[in-house]
Amino acid sequence: MFELSQLRFFLAVATELNFSRAAKRLNMTQPPLSRQIQLLEHQLGVELFERTTRTVVLTAAGRRFFIEAQDLLQRSHVAMLNVQKMSQGDIGSVEISFVASAVYAFLPMVVARGKERYPHIDISLKEMTTGEQFEALRLRQSDIGLVRAPSALTGVSSEILVSEPFVLAVPRQHELAKLSDITITHLDKQPFIMYALSTWQPFYELLTGMFRSNNIQPDYVQYIGSTLTILSLVNAGMGMAFVPESASRILFNDIVYRRITLPAGIESLLYLAWREDNDNPAFKVMLELIKLSMVPKME
Image (tube, rainbow, N blue to C red; front, side, top):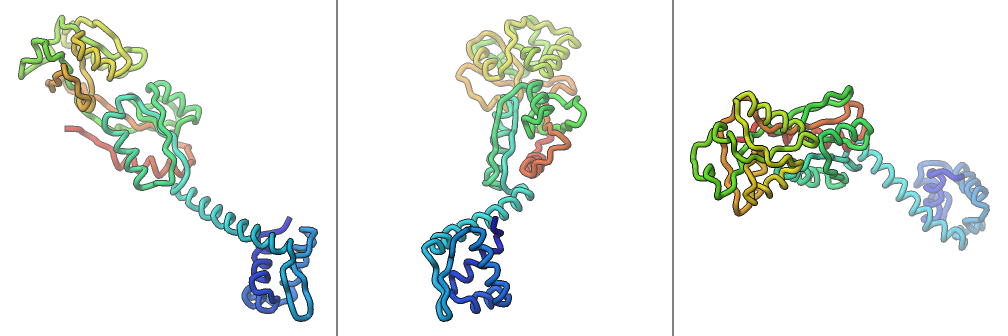
């Protein structure tokens, strides 16, 4: 099989139609250039030039090969540039998994910044529960996870991305919606919609633990695995619920959002999780971009 250097030799001769000028153009002497062209013709099994003592012209096969050689060299150049860009993280693909509530504010911001700064990186998004994301990271099916709990897996790191308060979503017709100062004691015996243990274990344990430690006994009417569904039920008047403050950007006609003072440590945390041995260059630049977008505290 011929080499790329032979294609360059051929194109120089084909352009100049003179071995002496082509050799000078290539900064080499004529004899080795002639030998390389002869070797190329032997490898291809065709004559590329008709030679006389006075002229050099391309054969029909030579004219066709001229087009192909230009294309091959161009593609090889593009391949070289692409692999260099990939090694620097300028092109490639990255898979980001996320919990549904990350789409309310943080994830759209990160994706927009990523597309603006790295337009040639393909960002693939997949919604998963926190448990599913850690499994995907373990199996290398995801590059970056936006999860609701810190990592307990060896080789998987995590950092807090966003820390924000919970707000109380109250049906507009409920008596608490009319109060300007609500405390958790007001929630005792009140109909309440709670995050499901199976899909939202961190929130379930945090909020139910808060109620128990303060001797508050809400009337849990539903356990739901989706913030949007929880808010839809609040809007229907089925009960009230705590949701991350960013979820209050979702407007419902019959929901009033109230910020109330909660015990220390009762806040909504969104974590960034990733495999420490991930060698995907696109992952590395996207990880740094996300870290630069971290919001330690949402006021």
